[in-house]
Length: 299
Image (cartoon, rainbow, N blue to C red; front, side):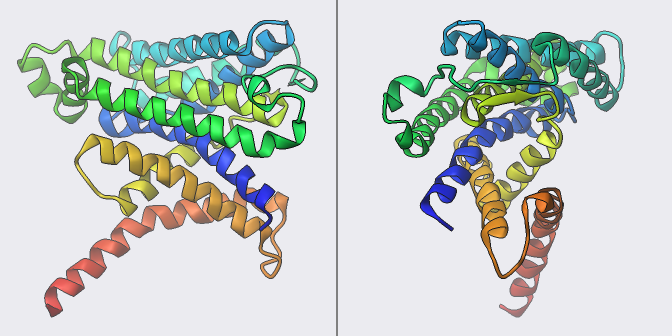
């Protein structure tokens, strides 16, 4: 694998680390099966691309993308807690609706950003050939800040209340926690991170596409599961670190598979590789548990 290909895989892995952190909030901390990610990821990209091509500041575009993602997550939670629609079904409804909304926002199935500024432009300068080095570094700083922010929030009283809501809703309500409010806020936060990832993704790839969110939730779940297998822990700061590392490892494995000439895989095999890796990630915890049980019997 060439250095450029390696940095490219690292770049995409860092972006999907944001997706994985968002999925961690919904699936693990809130125990809320959420498929909205497949819609909120392209939503963030659509909002950011539309504003950037309209001449607005890229950071403002990212902020608006975050707000749009938060609104989609809040709507999914609202359908569940207010209208009593099943969690999975509520997220599917929002995901389907977002497809049309994303088309409306962009005005076309895709929107190129060639020649437009991005959040990376001030760091790259006139030497555009340095982009493959600078962009991963900027993304790494963003990921570190987001991770530290999550660690701080979920260690606070509000964050602990949200975690209690996901762990045991009845007990949380008995302790006076407004569980419905916690679900609304948590789902908004989850999809805000995912939409932020979408906004960053379009700026690294040079354009937005209405179908770019397909399989987003699968990637996020795979990253979470791989991270949990690598670094099993109950400490939140370790869990968030493991999630980030899981996303990076996942993208590196895909890049290695696509760049291994002896395997003979091509770009059109990406979905096949993704399915195999996700299946492996799902089976790995069970295999690991069996190995530990056998080791305990023989020791």
